[in-house]
Image (cartoon, rainbow, N blue to C red; front, side, top):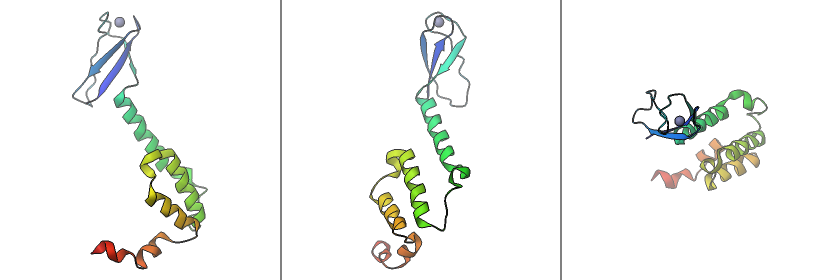
Amino acid sequence: MPIYEYQCEKCGRRTSVLTMRVSERVDAACCHCGNRKLRRLMSRFATLRSEEHRLDALADPSRYSDVDEKDPKSVARMMKRIGREMGEEAQGPEFDEAIDELERGGDLDAEEASGEADDSEL
Ligand SMILES: [Zn+2]
């Protein structure tokens, strides 16, 4: 459930508003003085939104204009950069292995086709 936090432009105090509807505009009034001129503050909901924006930014192709797709090392550098920006979500043994493989000059698809996949398919 989203929580909107507002700061009253009159008395400067904070009002938290819980809402069931994400899309609906909240008609909030200051719970201290009743003033309806409120400024939206960061909230849990707003934090989620900014997370989305961060992912959008990661997906921006212009960020990767310096990456040579045919050069595994170049791709590995890009993945490391993404991993750093995404934090824990993109880190773990599998992610590290993939980068190691790329840095060795290997091809991820080729490795998958070459054998070890047998166990997981049974
Ligand atoms: Zn107020």
